[in-house]
Image (cartoon, rainbow, N blue to C red):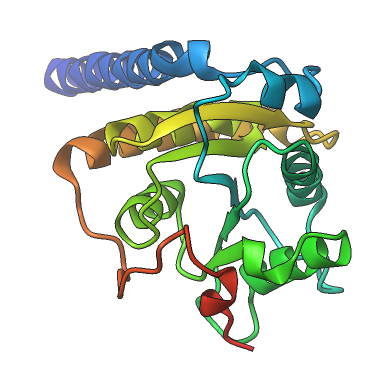
Length: 232
């Protein structure tokens, strides 16, 4: 190997290390900037609702989607999110639930499945809004603000994902607090944690650049009737 090649490889290695360090620093910043807005995993929904001042109301409980199983039921991680959202709703934390996910094709539909789960468990259909174009966390938050007019929200997702969702929400002027759902018990969490580092960097850039989501559309106020989002 020539000296020139060695020098190029050494320079490339330094650049790679610097980029990785920058990515982890950005990820850390996203996490620490919102961590005071995250409730503990073991705090009961009733205690969360009681901790909110009486004069303050939250527009909705926001639940990002994360997968439909082959039998049409929610993935385990999504089930945990829906269970926690249901607990908050029943505790009176908010009168509306906004479920946001991927419904990009007729054969893949996270949001109708989420609404169906909630209605089966006692939530009135008119209290559940569906965002059919929540293709990413960034798009979910963007559309929550610009389409549904959300100004304040409880965000329910797993803790590792909650920091990014809260960071996005706060950067869009949404008064948000995070309620962690139960974590997944499968061994894939290490991979999700690593992927989340890159996702935090991406969303940090997006919150600065503000690219438009794939779809926007006409306003559907969260204060109205959730059945306005029905497509079936």
